[in-house]
Image 1 (cartoon, helix red, strand yellow):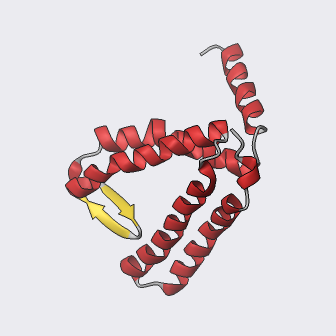
Image 2 (cartoon, rainbow, N blue to C red):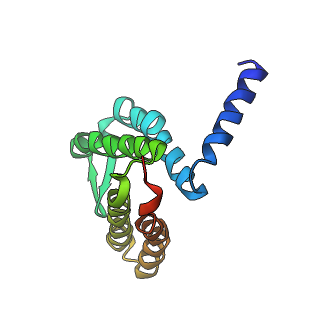
Length: 142
């Protein structure tokens, strides 16, 4: 890529970043990464024997994981579109999904390591975006 194209892309990202709160932009770009880079790799290239998906803290492996990947892909794709256009339907659904992540982080740490401290800490960390999303109804106007 030539340098002027790189600069245009970087300037475009900088402008887009400013269209929403910084933490929403972070979530938007994370959703883009998951939708267009990680999940296609995970679904098409990762061997079934290595596949894992976490739902509500329970780890699915093998074909069960592979079968539920499209649901994660759909969620991240809808999240990317919803944050991009700041769609009204993102409230309350983005915070509801992050609430599922709070539960998942707590349960997964208990099941994996029986570590109550790690469970509380990881759950509390994800409470921050959950609460921020819940309180952001007025931001989703698209």
